[in-house]
Image 1 (cartoon, rainbow, N blue to C red):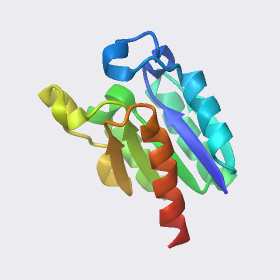
Image 2 (image 1 turned 180 degrees about the vertical axis):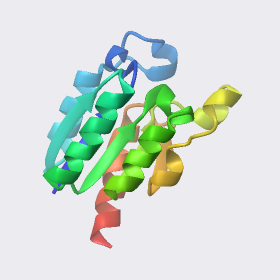
Image 3 (image 1 turned 45 degrees about the vertical axis):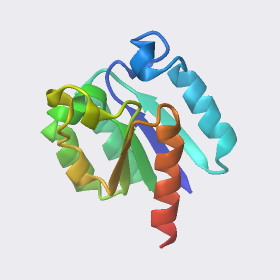
Length: 142
């Protein structure tokens, strides 16, 4: 199976940005761990630009990607354009977050992306990505 691991703004600064909240692992380390742990075709993409993320989601449709693990970063809270892109491609998606967004500032507690996803995983640090992939695999098996 083919999966897209998609990351939004500032996630290229993992390991640098607020490590007490987001951990010490870099995005490259997380990607490497996923590649080593899963025997599936994984592609990775990160952008700080909303349009680039939408373009990548639309490309995933034509590539016949089986599932998406998506950490939309701050776009979680206000990007209806990403929500619409997800609903238009109809590929199962799990939204993931490193931190427990429900326990953070009030503006971080609402996701406009979640309704376009099959589920949301947050608060497990870098393991949120692996848990997201496992959830997608289980969903696709059913």
